[in-house]
Structures are given as C-alpha cells and as structure tokens.
Image 1 (cartoon, one colour):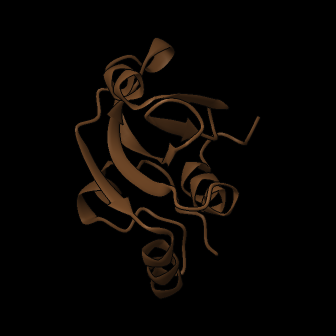
Image 2: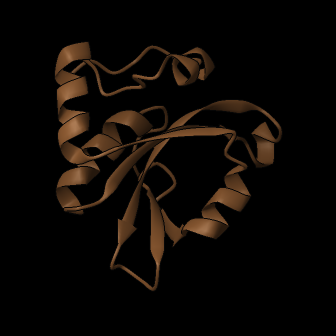
Amino acid sequence: MKKKGLCYQNAFHGLDKYPGSVLVHGIVTGQGPIEGVTYGHAWLEVEGIGEGTYCVDFNACLALPKEIYYRIGKQKYTVTYTASEAAKLARKAGHYGPWDKKIDKAVHRKVSPL
C-alpha cells in the first residue's frame, strides 16, 4: 500500500501507468474513523479497466466505478487535469498539488515537493 498523505504525488505518478487517464483533485468527506471530515484528495479517472469510468485511488489501493467512488467520498468540489496540464502545473508550482486554491485550503498537511 502507498504511504498515507501522499495522494497527490501517487495520483500524479499514476498518470504514467494509465495513459489517457484524468487526474482529479477534490474535496472529499471522510469515512470510518474520519467520518464527516472534509479534506483535499487526489485520484485518477480511467476508461478501459472496466465498463465505464473507474476511479483509481492509489492510497486506498482500489479501483471503483466512478458513481460508486463519488457516492462513498461525497465529493464537494473537483478539478480535473490532463497529463500535460498536470505536468505544466507541477513544474510551475514545484509540487504535486493541489494547485486549486479552494482545494489547497482544505488540505491539512504540507505538500510534497517534486
């Protein structure tokens, strides 16, 4: 399993594993021990690994149909990036994300530098 707290870095590098996928940064609602807590998170949306679009979450080591993943995570706000957009933003910012100001305010940890 990937280290917790590195979702932006893990999802960014996942773009190489799933060509044509979309990087998503969003504000999600926690489950289990963090039930109801909103925080910034990152994952990929991928076509072709099942029927329809799947969300691949490297920190949770899972891939679920998009509608189920969104229902579980209760996403409040999302921003999507192509691989080339993500690469440009990462170079410009010097880190893996988040790059959106609204999501950045929801993140409760230091960002991972490139």
